[in-house]
Each structure stands twice: as structure tokens, then as C-alpha cells.
Length: 478
Image (cartoon, helix red, strand yellow):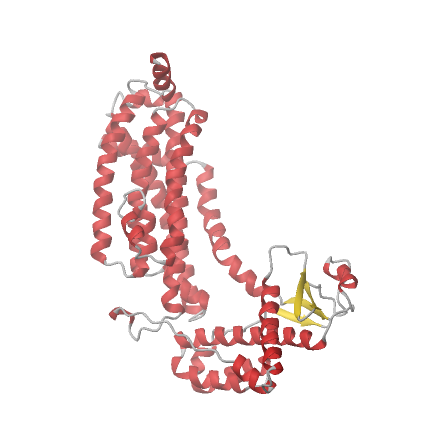
């Protein structure tokens, strides 16, 4: 057997034989699924947040309560419309018309369900069940001071629910002043909804003061244009952008973070392994039979085989779960995001990105490990390397906003950034030729880095050159 394969086999069985490998094999998919889907599921499972409104004038309290009701109605309509646009577009118009004709939110949802059930019964399997984000309850006390025990959790409402927050609206001259009271310090959305409601109320009052009929003022305030987004590319079909078109971007950013964490953790395994074997003189024994380049490549292939074993298991498990989610959840948000993970372009970008990213960063970490005498010494080098690894993550946000921006396109051709930005740009219409071009560029970069890393590896292992000796020489020369 070739020496490279012997080294690779040795490292592979060393890692696979450890109990930690089997723990990570099982727990990593569970943790990843929890991180990805738990926030969405928890947000859906959370009951409406209960608010109370206290105001100097009953009209102000009614306006704010109406604004929250309108928000809940609009959210329900938007969720149903997004679902029908991708599931049953032919039934969308009739269902939304029935929704709009209903007297209240509960009746509107029931009317839309009835319309879809009559015209497209197949779309009922994953029909959404919108839940309002906020519920306006009758204030259990007449002023804000008396409400504080309810807000702090010492007391509950008569129905047993806790009060999430309270809005106190008082008049300071003509301009209303809105006070939002809540122990949830990072959450200020209710105050923004109340602010918009009171702004409309102030406009209505100003128009009425000029002699305009209140009904006409309400009609003018209700003016709002309809907005639709379209994709001009020929591959987009009819062109209207729906959740189906946006889902691959959500999948891409999730895979980019997965790729980043996997590449960094696997490269760190190589760094720790080579330092341990160097301190134990194991590498000296191996170098009596193989060259530094063969040892370097063998170690990369061995850990790559470990990663391939993990990905085969995770891929089979994740692919099966995603396929089930895509078929069972249909055109719901989770179903479409699950389908997006199975997009061939994303899978190809992830495979190319992992292979190239692992080899590039793995070679760098092996070279650095050969120059270190201990883990503590390696930690001092990981700071700058971690900053380099973090730079692609800083570009993911701008890349999601505009994946075709000149700086993002240019950065995606920088080999150390390419594996991650390739994934983010893949759903934005990145062609197969460009994906192949980036893959070829990374392949050349991998070859160059392997040759350079082999030289550093030889200097660190064979010639016993280390960072401490290197800096010590410079200090003595100084």
C-alpha cells in the first residue's frame, strides 16, 4: 500500500476508534436541528403576548387596540397569501376575497379555509393556522402604578395569564406621550405599533380640525399600495418572488455557517493531533518511512475520511428527514426551506466548498502545528488565523443583501473566502461554469498550499524549527 494511504488509514482508525467520535456522530445532527428549527417552532408555539392599554382618553386606547387587531389581521392574511401563492395560486384570489369580506380575524381565517377547501382541497394538508402575536386584555387596574405587580409577575390576570407589557398613553398638551412598561427590556415592538396608531390618530384629529369629515379622514389614512416583487431572469418562470424563491437563501446561509464551523473544527483537530504526535516523538518515527509531503497528505486524507464518514451518516439522516419534511409539510415555510436544502446547486457548492476549504485550512493548520511545541503555543497563533476565518462570516450579511455586489463577487474569488461565499451566492443565479471556475481556482490554491505547507512541515518536524526558536533567534539578532 502507498505510504500516503498507510498514514491516512492510521489516522482514520485513530479518530474513529475514539469514543468522542461516536458521541459527535449522534449529537451533532440533533444540536444542529435544534439550532435551525427550534427558534421557528418556539416562535409558533409561543402563545400571544398579553398587553394592557391604559389611556387618559378612551379614544386613544381604542385606536391603539384597533391597531393591534389590524396588525394581527394583516399578519394572518400575509401568512395565508404566502402559502397560497406557492401551493394553490388559482385558489388564492377567491380565498383572500373571502378573507377580506369577513367581519373579524377569526371569521376571516375560517372563510379563507372554507374557500380553499372547496376549490383546492389538496392544499388543506399544510394550511397555516395563524396565531396573533399580541392579545389586548382589559387592564386589571386603572393606572400604571397599580399594574406594576402584574408586570413583575407577582400577580396574574383573572384568567390566569401573565401580563407581558402595558402601554400608558397620556396627553401632554396636544401631543400624546406613550409609555411602554415591560420587564422584557429588549422588546419594543408594541410601543412602535402604538406610535404608528397615535400618529394616524393625530392626523385624523388635524384633518377634522380643518373641517374634513372623520369618515373621509379614515378613508385617506387607509390608502396603501399593493407591492409585489418580481425576478427578471428567464429561469424564474412567471417572475413573481414568493417564499419558494427565497427559501434557498435561508438554506444557503445555514449551510455556510455549518461549513464554517465544520472546517474550523476539523482543521483544529489536525492542529492538535500534529502537536501531540510531535511532542511524543511519533512523527519522528513515521518520517523514517515516509517523506514530509506524504505524511502531510496522508494526515489530510485520514481526517478527510473521518469527515466523510460523518457527512455520509449526517447526509443520509438529514437528507431523509428533509425529504420527509418537504413531503409532509408541503408548501409551508418549513417544508419549502427543507426542500431548498436538497437543491442540487447548493449541495454541489457545499461539497466543493468543504473539500477545498478543508484542504486549504487543514494544510495551514498542519503547517502551524509543526512549528508549535505545545497546545499553549498554538493558541497564540490561532488568534490571527481565527480572524482570517471570521472575515468570510462578516461578508455573509452583505452577501445576503446583495450577492452580486462587486465587492462580494471579487471576494468570492479570493480562495480563502471562496468556500463560504460560493454557498451564499449559489441561489442568486450563480452558473455552473462559474462554480466550476471557482472550484478549479481553489484546486490550484490547494496544490500550492500543500507544497508550501510541506516545506514548513519539514522545517518544523525534521529540522525541529519552532516558533519559539524562530522568535528567539530574531530577538538575539536584535
